[in-house]
Image 1: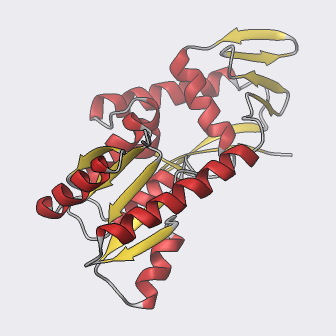
Image 2: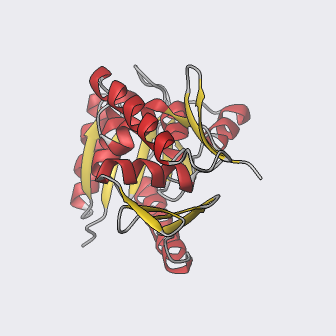
Length: 232
C-alpha cells in the first residue's frame, strides 16, 4: 500500500468525491481543496507528494496555482484535470509548471496509471538530485541555514527561525521575483493582512542584517513581491 500524499484541488464536489474515494482505495492519502486559493494554502501546509489540479476553478485557476507553487517548489509533480482540448491550453498547462494532464471525462484506471508513473519518476529524481544546499554565499556574507546564522568577517548573527526560513527562500531563488502571497504561504502558512505586514517587517530586518555589503539587496517589486540580487 502506498502512503503517498495527494492534494486534489477540484471544485466539482461529485467528481472530487469519486476521485478521492478511488485514490484512497488505492492506498493514497488524499486531501481535497475546493478552489484555487484553498488549494494553494493547503499545499504549503500539507507538502504533498503530488498535486492534482482542476484548470477551471473559482478564486484562482489551476494555471495560476501551479505558477505560485513553482516559485518555490520545482519538483512536486502536478497533474492537470482539464475539459479544454485545444493545443494552446495544453501548452499553457506545461508552461505554468504542470508535468502531465488528463482530459475530462477520464477513467479512474487511466488516472491511477498516470499518478503511478509520475510518482515513480519523482522518486528517481529524488534519488539522483544533489544534496540539499544549507550554506549560501551572499557577497561577503555567509549564511548557514541549519544553524540560523549569518556571518560577516567571521562574526555571526543569530537569526530567528522565520528570518532564516525567509532568507533561505531568497537564497534558493536568487534573481527571481518571489510573489508576496507565495512567501506568506510558504513561511507563515497564512496570507492574512496581519502576516503580510509581518513579512514587510521581516524583510526590513534582513536588509539591516545585510547592509554591510551594499552589493546584496532585497528589492521590492511593487505590487508583486521581493527579489534578492547580488551585484558584482
